Length: 432
Image: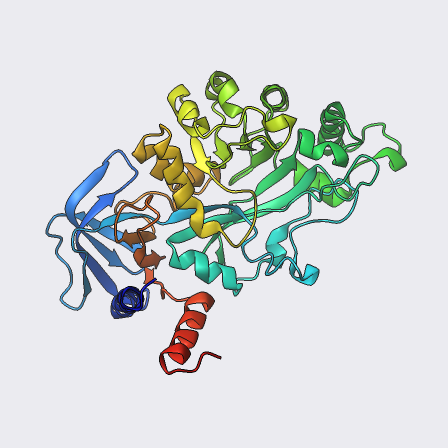
């Protein structure tokens, strides 16, 4: 990059930071963002040339010429696009720092036991450096998830029921009543269930039997669940349970997905499919069962026999069949900000643009049971939204303003601080 273009890039970044600081205010202050194009992700659709009034932590009005209090802080949106804050996917945000330090990895249970009571939210670190990096890129909510520790059939080190995870907002808060149970099935789960797909269903059926019938005649040394595990699992089996009771099952092969759908119907489970490399092949069955799919839009090449049918058109084909599609990479912490670029790839391969944005906003909020709080924009909702420099699904666009719960977030992270620190040294002739 030429030095002049680097200066322009840094100047633009500095200008964006100044604007963000200018509109930053306590959550009790009023803020009005003028002259923007709002993608509400509701039946209202796209609203052009409108204003957004934020009072406290809520959006109080969206419309043309909104009257704002005299002391409200005003931001000129310059016709920019505004969307709900983006979903970061099923992530390890706040559960890991760097892979080379196992002491910072809190997302997996290294026991060959079925322990659905394992809950990663207890380990969540809101000060993790990866959260600031993701938030700066327009990500305002995500799911933190456990991972089944993969092993082989001869060396087990985990369980197909990975445990429970929560939804988070990227101001470091756990979202109440947004817990989900995560299960690993298909080829990836073979080593966690004696080397057989059939054993996965056998073990799950026994675990469900123990949860629903604690006095079942099963020898103590043959039981899978602890008392706490029975209580945890029962919350996902009881239709009367308050809040989300979603069971998210990681599975790829088309035939496995059909077995999972039949099993979920038999056991009355409210499920979503994650990964779903071959989900497009059984799209009609997924649509009929009203089961959403959380997929990686970049999954294209087969890494195993489970993913032979991988295609960049997965999302488009599912959407055409009437399946709700959300986006996520395989759980990790450091590339969350790139998920919107991946959604753009899905759009480039046939998915309608609005559906691409929905896969990063409204749909994942619905899957997680928090659609009443995030994922859409309208009066009365939480003020979680992003002002973009351009098309949010275009890799060249940036987030100019990020609001979470009515508070303008600083567009800084550990990465920007290091950039500025070392650029200053280079500018002053000190390369080291």
